[in-house]
Image (cartoon, rainbow, N blue to C red):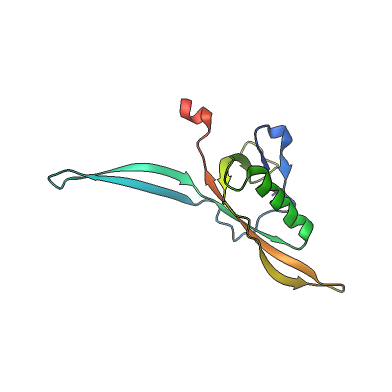
Length: 140
């Protein structure tokens, strides 16, 4: 599996992230909300208000440079202000999600890591996404 990537509108401008997500990621979550109407006689009618994919991808990073690529993504989309296309595997660009990310940027510092050399800071970053409706899907 190749590293994931993202782009705003043109697939040719895809930016590939520095590493792939971990197996602990929850990439197939779905969030749903229903609305229930109750008549004056107590009869309930429940309808689906929305259903959207809400995947979360966990990344372990061993350098500040890798973490900065995720900060660049955060800054480019303004947190949760702008939508973008997320490609879980850059080798298969046809599999993509039209999403917004979580509003903040909160990597977790895990401490130092060293192997026969100086300690390097390690980070975890949980990229939380919410599926959005693309304009082409509304017209269908």
